[in-house]
Each structure stands twice: as structure tokens, then as C-alpha cells.
Length: 443
Image (cartoon, rainbow, N blue to C red; front, side):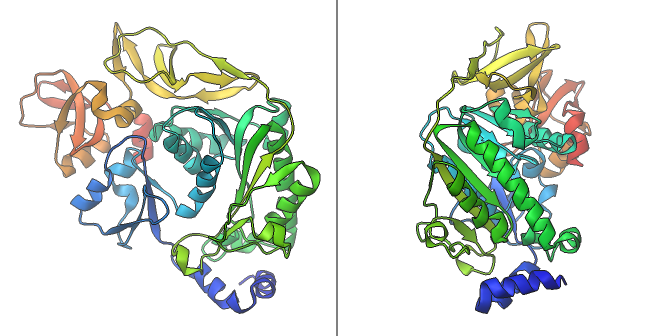
């Protein structure tokens, strides 16, 4: 037990202290965010398996799974990018960001993006419109981010890898909105993660507060005039939360948005102007039962110029079996086709843009696994429905032998309406065409 942590929060929370500590020790509840960009009822799988769940009151595409023993990662929906295992607290900053921008095709920066829960949620809620730049300075964490972008079909996302403190040197005054879910002391996990418990001290909090202020400095500078910054952490320390808000208000000409509107717990700074506008989620408060601890604040930039930094991109000309609106770009690289936003920002060094769409074989497209998951029957591939056991076998990378006669040489496997992956029919044997990149991540 970290005594200094207990002393600090006993002083801050008073009579609520015991409830607060007990809530941090409880087993986490299970929530999934359902991929709403695909218009597929992934909950149909839980219904089939007789797994009890409850839809969340605040997010229509979030469900709490009641069965403590059920393994969510061992579902078709999770393996194919239909479920993202995510506590709804972490969607609150995404919700606030989207509520405060009024741009049809926004340019958004997710400043500290890995592993991609908020990035992919933004992409889904936007209906894949606009452009999301997802930044991750760690090359190791960048791999996780890019895997999830592909798996969840977030094709309007482009990734970059910069130290977020210096991003303004490459793209000043260009973003409609910035989401900064800042690196923090992770106090919400302090009794569930020994690393967090053993590493926590006031020096760490001060060090992280300094980093957070440096990141916020850059975040303010990359915004257009009128742009929105949503700042969040999953920690409780006022030094990493309200103190950062006060720092921004003292240094910049910004409006502190009233995100709270008396719907959430208030701040702990003692400054009523700040405390009444910021959002605190405490896990011991019943009206958000099961939600993790979280802090969110929002700012609107009042000054600066808008820099036109969009670069439109041209589509390659191919014979495609299904049509999309004009919000995308299909480009070719090394024989592969990639689906991405129709524009990028000039001046940035990109790690990746969009998702793999497929590859050209002669004049035909062999669709990628992620394309099959994202578009399903829209690909025009012949659909073949199999039972649940066969679908799970196929997702492990195995071929299937079936007793049905299939005329088409290739098609798309389904369990009910859930797309599983592409197959090639070779004398009645369904050869598995799921990309090995995903098989390694699925098992």
C-alpha cells in the first residue's frame, strides 16, 4: 500500500475517501464499444452465445457484459474489429470533442494516440469523414496503433511519429480540433497494476505535470483560430488536471468550455470558475457505475490565423465492384491498393495513411482482410454462411472443407451477418485468405 497516495487523497476527498479507495480495488467491469461505422449488429453474437449484456445509458454503441467468466477477446466480433474492449470513461473526451466542432470534414489531431481506442472511436463516430492524424512517438506503441487502425477499418486515419511537444514546428494553426489524452500517473489503476503502485510518488506526478504542460503548449499552437482542444487523463492528481487547466488559462487567450453543466463531479482545485466547468469521473459515484476514473477539460482558441494545409489527393482508376461517396482516396503503392482520406496535411512525415484495400491481380482486385471486415457484402463477393465453430476455426487461419457445392472460385465467409474473411474455393476446400498479419494478432 502506497502510504503517501493514501494521505494525499484522504486530505482531498475527506468523507468520500473510504468509498474512493474501495472502488479502486474492485474488479474492472467489462465493456465493449461496438464498431458503429459498419452498420453490423455485432451484439448478435452475444445473443447467440446467451451472454448477458446491458447497453450503456450514455453511449448507444457501448455495452457492459455481465458474465464475469466470459472472454471477450475470444469472439468473432473482437477478432474482426467489431468490438473494441474499452471502458466508456475513455469515450467521454471523444464525445465532447465531436459536440464542440462544427465542421463537416474536420482535421483532427489525436496527439498521444496508441493503442488507438479513441482514434478508432473518432473515426467511427465521424462516419470515416475528414482526416485524423494519430501521433505516437514510441515506435513500439506505433505498431499497436497501426494494427488497430487496420483491424477496425479506420481508413480516414494517417499516422505520424513525433515528440508531441514539438509538433507545432511542423503544422502550426492547421487543426480544427486536438484530442490530448495525456501521459499520466495512471492513478485509476493504482491497486490493479503493481507497476503503477510501486512507481507512484509526488516526484512522478510533478514530472508528468511538466510534460503535460509542454504537450498542451504544442496542442494550442497547432489549432486554428476557433479550434477545440480536449484535454484528458485517467488520473486524479490536481497537479495533472486542474493545475494544467490553470496553466493554459494563465498563458493563452482561450475560452474554458463548460463541459460539466452539472452532469458530473466537479474539479478539486478550489477555483470555482475551473471546477464548475471541468469534468471528473470518480469510480465510487453510482450514477456512472463501472466507469473508470477520468478527468476532461475543453478549450476554444480565440486567436491566430487559419493555415490552409490540406493537400487533395487523386484516386487511381480501377474497376471496383462497389461504390463509395467522394470522401476517400484510393491509391496504389508497390502493387497494393490503399484506402485513405481524400486529403492530407502538408509538411508532416507520415508513417502510414489509411488501410490496405487489396491488391491488383491483372484487372481484378483481391480484397484485403480488413476491407472484407469493413465492407462485408458490399465487396460483391459471394457470401457463404457457416456455423459458429467453423467460423472460429477459420479465424485461426485454418482451411475449411464443406459439403456444399460452390460455383464461385472465391467468396466471403459469414457467421450470420458478421463477415469473417475471404476464401478461395479449390475443389471444395475453402482456402483461408485471412492475412497472416491478423492471424498472429488474433490468436
